[in-house]
Amino acid sequence: MSDDDKVVSLGTRREFKPHVPTAEAPAMNYDDQVLQWIRGTGAGGTTWKEFATGMSMHHGQASGALSKLHRRGKIARLTERRDRCKVYVHPDFVNGRDTDDERPYRLVDQLADVLSRLPEEALAKADLDWRNERVEALDLYFARRC
Image (cartoon, rainbow, N blue to C red; front, top):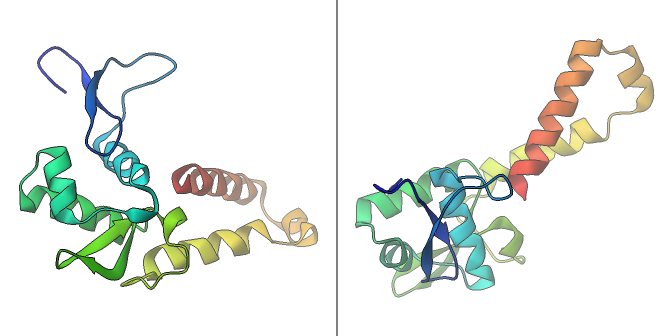
């Protein structure tokens, strides 16, 4: 947050403006800001250099933010390079291109798929607390993948 209690709102790829949190548009945490910025780059994605320039960060900050989201499966790192740097994209924009390591989000996707396809007969026999946890976990998964 800045000194005047404003949160950075990410506009277009290189355009930023102050954002005052409201009930309709609450304050975003740092990871959400980064994720929104990367999603805004679309299928073209971004390199760490482009990201660092756009977010006014040094290499360590930019690389750390991108690596953290990549490890969590929130973004994908393509094997293609631009200006000798790998390209990061939102998973919705991979479009069949090769990625460095899809395991983090592929595994979570597989687990969510299994949980969502459990037969009704099996769910009926399961403990109520477990069924509630399953619903909460799937809700959280779908909210974070968007």
